[in-house]
Length: 298
Image 1 (cartoon, rainbow, N blue to C red):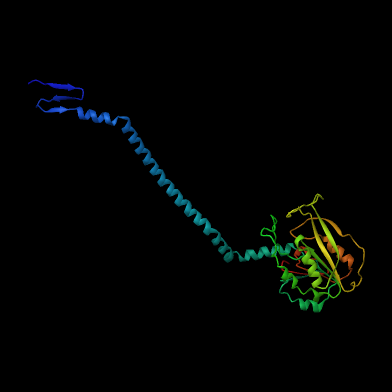
Image 2: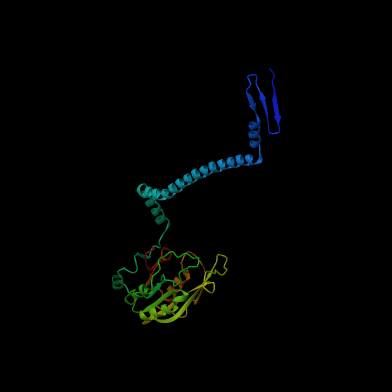
């Protein structure tokens, strides 16, 4: 028996000993297709897609973890506050005590911590008629962004609330000193007239830095480096009243928020020595010997 085979351009066939013919042309054709550029590109694209899908799953897992962390952080402040309220009340009380110990009020001052809008002014007026009334009203500013970067630490009051203060009951003869802001000049003069006072003078406080430079602040058109205190008078001069004292200009360092210069108090005490002095809307840093100070921030 002899073996025979046929070769051609498209394939190769051969016979085995049992007469079975094997054609290898299809196998060769398959191998050629697998190694072709289009097949390689298809396999490469499939691999990239698999990697992208795996990356997507990783990102989804990371996003879920971040979401859980954010939820935990949002819940943590509320839990901390409730824990402090329940377990740290004693500690908070100790802090308040420390603040009170650090602050020493003048020995002969009369502080009255009260809401000036609800305070029993009639009882105070029945006990004492004052020679001088000083006030720094928390004027309500008109603009939507009134502070222009400056924080205000107290609640502002509408003009009508300030007007309702029973100032006429507190003094029959004497002076009133009112700190005023730029857009409340006219309103302050109206209040003086309503309360029975006539304008007699004004005081300008030129603010300075620790280096004695002019301390400029925010303003709508111009930067502000001063504040003005209007002075009114009604009735007769109070006892011991002196004339032509001090100066209507104070050069003094700017201190705490809304804290006014100590020189003004000294000027008032020089104007009316041994007088009866009342300050409305006072703060702890305003407390002074022989003054009655009423305010909700004492």
